[in-house]
Image (cartoon, rainbow, N blue to C red; front, side, top):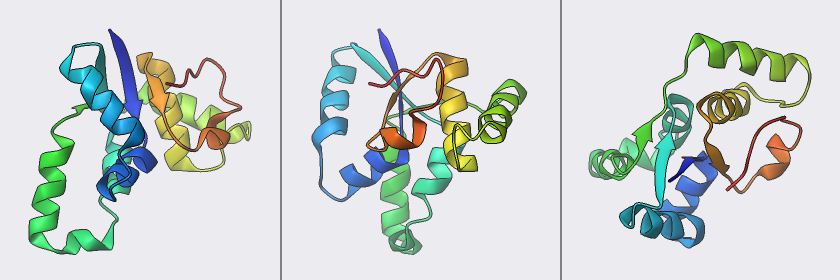
Length: 126
């Protein structure tokens, strides 16, 4: 089974009606071909949407996120994220923690922003 970390941009696209990648992943998940993950950074980024100030939308967003397992951020993940930032392989802390989570947990990254992660060694894309 392929384990996939779903980046924030893919979640946001899906929530705006652009179903492409995530719809395909959901179909594969129902067939037990993939296992979908997010991490706390992805959750936080997703929840920055101002539309979620509305309680009903926030509850719906919470229900949506239940389709994913949470890959936690460990000390080892933090160390790798720091190395990625120090080496200028990733420019933003959030992206560094997302990339490090994928590498440490051996998850393929589903993202529309591959250019943000192209310099990360051992990172595989979905």
